[in-house]
Image (cartoon, rainbow, N blue to C red; front, side, top):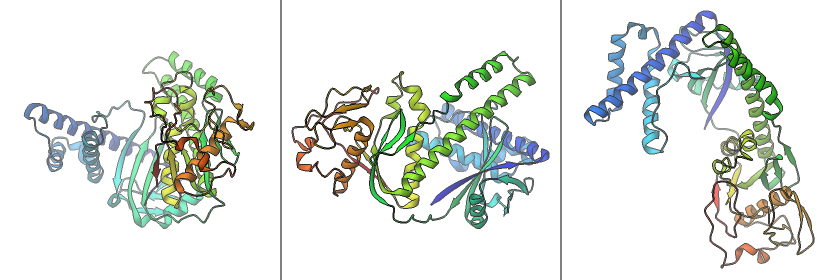
Length: 414
């Protein structure tokens, strides 16, 4: 199983110059080969094969002597990247490969395993020109990297828009399964007021990282806009702004890792809704708050970590009316509005917190899928209103809000 460890490196001035040349050469090779493929198709209606691209790479290297200063193994990865981009376009429906620009925010190149020399403490060596580079990461990752350097698959070098250098080291190793957790099943409701509310009543706050620093960002953007284009002062202002954005991104990433690890450590099965996040972003009143939460990134972290640690993720249908159902008696409050954070069941008189009630209903639905006992003993499956054969057919989402209908469509992910 693959795991990437990201470390920050501190190359010398001479190594920085070499890295700049290497990144520029990889970009030149990629763009040149992409142009060659496009021209061959437009002129001859012919798709260039991978082996022919390799021959074209040899031809380009013979035309430009300065290309030979860059490591050949790294340049070959540009060819592989282009072929993967074409495969994704034809097979997965991804966008057509784009030309790489010198003005992009980040630049990267990849070193295969045979272009990696090894790790010694907090020093890493790639190729002859990039030997004994000091790096920083957590002590845990440093020890892990030193112990598993023999099974490194590849290393990606990245230069950020704030002129920082990082290495992403890809290691192929089986992860240890976590010990048996304290809870078997838990339901989580992803929200805006609170980031996550689980069925046990625990709240994970929305740290509002962008909104809490909005004034600072506006000020830095204003300073950047006043600087003359092409001047050194403008470049300084750009780097200053980029560093703030990077810091905010790191804080958010750290928080997402913390929450996902906490949930996976304490629970065997996590049940959540299959939200149409792309559609939710079309609601302009909530788009900024939803984007700030990075819900898609959080779900991705839960899924790949669950495969690492032997946990399970269940996604229930987005049309499931989790907020409108009473978790005690199953009564459905059809007129519940988004602004109502609490409501009282007209059937049994129970007062519900909207988010906790939704999380409990999500857990109950997960338990129903797994055919184990429900968390609410008063609420039996015989009383479950959605099991009626005359349930309404689901309506297509208009992309703006979650539409809760009397229907269940299930998806299990492991």
